[in-house]
Image (cartoon, rainbow, N blue to C red; front, side, top):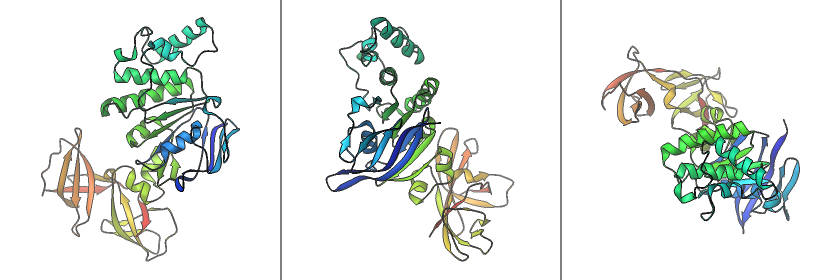
Amino acid sequence: MQNQLEVRDVSVKYGRQTVVDRVSFELESAVIGCLLGPSGCGKTSLLRAIAGFEPLALGEILLHGENVSRPGQTLAPEKRRVGMVFQDFALYPHLSVGANVAFGLRGMSGRQQRQRVAELLGLVGLSGLEEKYPHQLSGGQQQRIALIRAMAPRPEILLLDEPFSGLDVELREQLAGEVRTILKREGVTAILVTHDQLEAFALADQIGVLGSGRLRQWDSGFNIYHEPADRFVADFIGQGTMIPGRVLADGRIESSLGILSADFNQQHQAGDSVELLLRPDDLVHDDESDFKLEITDKVFQGAEYLYTLSLDDGTELLCLVQSHHDHGIGERIGIRLAVDHVVAFPS
């Protein structure tokens, strides 16, 4: 499958400050990627460089095999066949829904424009709203209109800059799943920028975690969660705790939870001190287990409680338990390990 986007050793600077530092990744046609990270990590600057709004200090960007950015040379955004969906949707308030969607279709006849608009409105379940105006739509409807307006000219790649940030949490997660379905149905190559990992997991095939301008890991959501490349990714993605351990001669790790097998991100020698990443789903509540831990905190999450459990040495672990198991703080509950991915980092 052909790469629709290639980012090669790209750096972006504002004055002397490097905000994107030698980032490289590739995105194949019809694949949805995501740039994920905290505020200030460089993800929006990188997206703007892909769109053509920011020049490169180092590296190059290729779209569909064509070099569109290198130091000293930047192809204008309007010549890149790139679609953009912004945080505020940027719909034109004085234009009807139909006119908004048709805005980028100037090369088509009136009949072709009407057909394309009707096709896209049907795709997002908003048929018949051509004559409405943006202020007459809900936030979710406006977001769908912004999406199909960007898709209307059939761009080579679609860039989505925090497109759900102005919506409430429940609607954001729902729309992320809906947008994925729409993009997959149309075979659109896309990149989402977000700080919300649940949006990233719901929408993207490949996720790039950025921290301090560097790409820490480019991988599937599953691998980023279960096999983080470094401590930054482990801390940023999901929930978890670190417990100390010591590497044995056979490569397994001795810890306060017993002897565990682990995935290593780098070589360790027997006797090395390490820290093990344990996720809440690595511990399973089991009333029949003789291994019991004390509950020191609990958070109700609807279908589940997130319990904080304490080992005898004071180490705290997290455990997700179905909420009909309502135990009190100070109570000891049975636990068994269900550890398929234990990742070890140097202490």
